[in-house]
Image 1 (cartoon, rainbow, N blue to C red):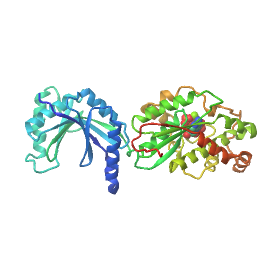
Image 2: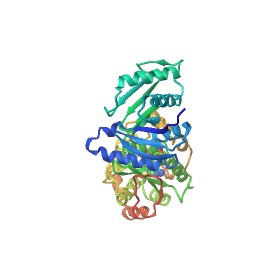
Image 3: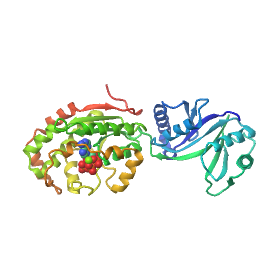
Image 4: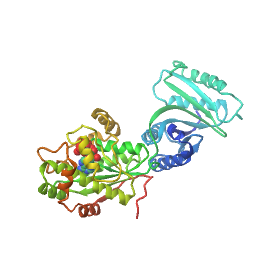
Length: 401
Ligand code: ATP
Ligand code: MG
């Protein structure tokens, strides 16, 4: 059988809706994919009428092509990925390409052909193409059924100006917007289950996320830092994290725990974390903070405590999980691949110097009064200066010099 050039079609519905900004989004997604697919045999990526076309190197096998498609699925902005071939505008060749594409589509019982012409300079109309290519497929797969409504596989045939794209295996992508199309955020990133999901959700809406992790070091070991690094490497695969700042926080917690009423400790730790994250956001020119809080999930995540931490900063604090159920968050963490890492035990700053009865309904004036005893502004600068940046591959992010 003839060899055809393997291609992967990347569809991006939501970007298509964005009207005026469409060109910018398309270019962003193209750049992100170019950078993220470095390890795959990709020759080039083109933009054609409402989708991206990934050309694979000659001789690329179907396993390699599928692996590349799987890598594309999780990239924000990708609504659907289809695997197939590019071929000449000749019915006999198109039929062969359709057989090849369907052969690679995995197990199926029923199929149909869905052909279309983007250029009417092709003499055969789509109905006729459906019939002719369908016939070829029926001969090649005699024990499979043609089914017009909900077939297992739809063989797509698209005739464009100088070529035809034929594909069969087609899978839904993660959706959303390309990372780098919605500004920059600073996400408070623990090694727990929730905050990696919160950060990822903002990436899927197109924000470039920069993590800030507060470690108990030097009062605890640095285990949580390794877990956060593992989590960041998972998020990096789809370009969903740019950088993580690790802040050694243990000594400051110790100071606070000695000099403040035990019930207010946690709130003061958290206010200091927010202020340091805000200072890092200022230095990074980020527009918002992000946390993994979910209303009522733990005793400290009450409306009063949310107010008490918001009061510490002026930047907007985004909480993408605020209305999510724990089981939904766990499901998403499992899909993302961060759940197993997050389930490992690590002492971080949150397990350090915990009071027996933390305040769950903090009163703002008491919190502010307790905090006034500490040189907070100096601490914020010192902690932001001490923050250690770790960089990850995120095509949309250029660190400043
Ligand atoms: P997670 O599962 O994200 O650890 P949690 O259920 O443990 O959250 P909290 O401890 O109340 O809940 O933390 C709430 C949010 O505060 C976290 O989602 C995260 O955004 C931030 N946070 C908590 N601990 C840290 C830390 N050590 N470093 C950075 N951010 C943190
Ligand atoms: Mg936690």
